[in-house]
Image (cartoon, rainbow, N blue to C red; front, side, top):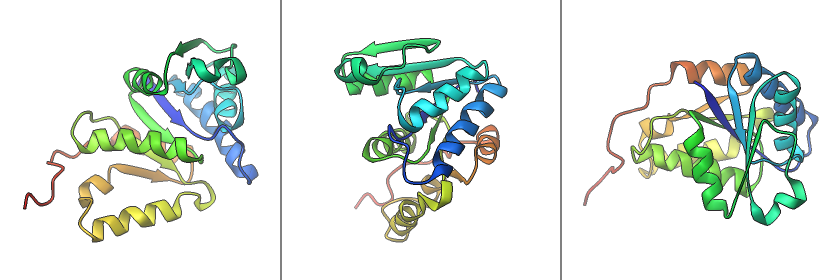
Length: 190
């Protein structure tokens, strides 16, 4: 795995553990010689994970849309790509990355990781996707996914594509062993 994309909040969140884990993840990724791809901002958890990787000698690639590049872009990265739209941002981040991790964040974080998971479910890629569930932040979301399986809207094998760990090392270990399921998305053609 050459590059991992991190999706996370542009805010720091309510708990110090979110920031501590973002820093730990940035350090761990750089220690493993993996390049970090992220949204290009210098603020919040985004800025913390990138800064930690850079300070630890890692390569960090930011991708940010023009609409807020002048407000929050980190100009001290290994590479910074300024693109016209959010759609182009997400496409470039996908193309650059071999795996995807979500840390706590808001609607943008959830949307970004779920778009990548949807593409995996449709068989458009076989890259690992995971969540670092710091202090149970994603518990309700994971419960909802399990409920969706029970209600026959998600296949169990597709639900299992969402790799989960409470800490960065555990998730990266799962990434190393990941094998994408080979099955159709559709449960019922009636």
